[in-house]
Image 1 (cartoon, one colour):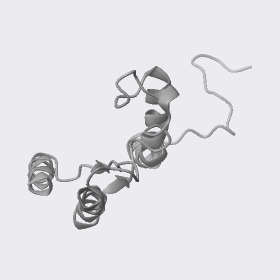
Image 2 (tube, helix red, strand yellow):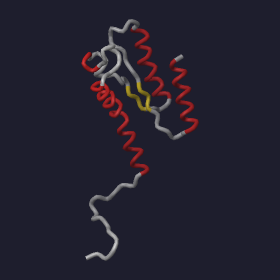
Image 3 (spheres, one colour):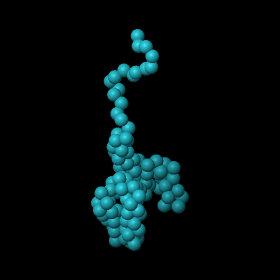
Length: 123
């Protein structure tokens, strides 16, 4: 059901913005997850959705955070401020090249080798 729900969201985005860049953000559970078959299915699902939709994939949002108690709130599940910094890095690793490509297609490049032009008479 989760896969179908996520696919529905992707389909709606594509219907409204056909040229949108899709990024799938996955999660992986710790090795000692209570139901490792379920956890494995989750990992597989995100990869399949990314492949099917020609989307970029952040394979594990929680990489480097999930098993580090110092990076989580006392509940042991949710990242604290330091953990969120790592989450941002995990996403940015995948998102940055997409953002740069999009920016370069809409913002003309600036020739930094040429001197800046100013209004008025030149010396």
